[in-house]
Length: 434
Image (cartoon, rainbow, N blue to C red):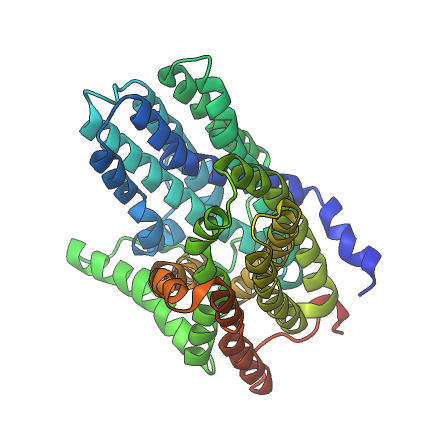
C-alpha cells in the first residue's frame, strides 16, 4: 500500500467520531484519580482515606464481568439509536449525573458518599469503554483498526487534559463544586458524538433479547448465560492455537508495563524536580504518544499486522534501552526530553498496532465481551508482574534495570514469530489482498 493510501484513512469522517468518543472515554479518569486526590487533599481529608479512594477504580479491571449484558441486550428506551449507540448514550447520561452528584457533595463531611459517587462514575465510564471498543471494532476493517485506535487515543488524551490540567487551572479561581459541575459537561461531547454517529452494521451480531421470551424465567436466564457468557469463551478457544495467542497478548507489552511504575521514581532520583518531570511528561510525552499513534496507524495500514507488531515490538525494546543513557547522564534535561519522546513515540505506535491485533481477534457476534477479556489480559502485566519492578531496580541498579526491561520484549516477539509460522496472524494489509 502506498503511503498516500495509508494516510487517506485519517481523512475519513469516521475519525471525528473516534476523537469525540475518545474524549468521552478519557475525561472521567482524572476525575476519580489525580484531580480527585487534589480535591480531597485541599479539603484536608486524611491521607489514608485518600489512598483508599484508589479502590474506586477497580471496576475498570473487571468490566468483562458485565460486558455480556452490554454486548447482547438492547436498551428498550433507546432502541431507536441502535444497540451500540443506545448503550453509549445511556452510559454518558449516567456519567454526567454521577459527576454532578460528586460536585454537590462536601469532600470533608461526606467522604464516604463521595466515594460511592466516584464509584458510579467509574462503573459508567468502564461500561462506556466496553461499548466504545465494540463500536470501533465493528466500524472499521482490520487494516483500519490501527488508525482508528490512534485517533481514539488522541481524543482520549484531550479528555485527560480537560479533566486534568484544565480542571486544576479552573480550581485556582473556582470552587471544587463549580469545577466538577463544569467537568460534567464533558459528557456532552460523547452525547453529541453518539447522536451524530452511525450505528455499525449489526446484521450478523447476535442480540439476545431479539429471541422470543420462551420458557420459564430460570430457563431464560440459563439461555442468556449460555449465549452471552459461555459462547464467547467457546468461540475463542475454538480458534487454532488460542493458548499461544493468549500468552502473546500477555507478553507483548510487558516491557512498557514493567517500566511504568518506576519511571517517575527514576526521574526523581536523577535529580529532576517535580515541575520538570510534569512539564516534560505532559508536553513532550503526550505529543510524542499522539504522534506515535498516528505513525502506528499508518504502519499497520501499509505493512499489515505481522510486520507492524515486529517493528513496534523492537522499538519498544530499543527505546527502553535509551534510558540507560539517561542513567549515565544524570540530571540532563535534554536527554530526558529525548528519552521520554522516543519512548512515548514507540509506545504510541505499539498501542496502535496491538489494539488493531486485539480487534482482529474478536468475533463479530461477541465483540464487546471478547475485547473486554483480551484488554483485561493485556493489563495483567501492569497489575501483577510490574509489582516486582521496584525490587528489580533495587537489586541491579538503574542501568541494568533498563537493560533487563528492554529484553522483556523477546518472549512476545518469539511468540509473534510462532504465530506467524502457524499461519494464525495477518501478515499483509487486507487492501493488498485480492
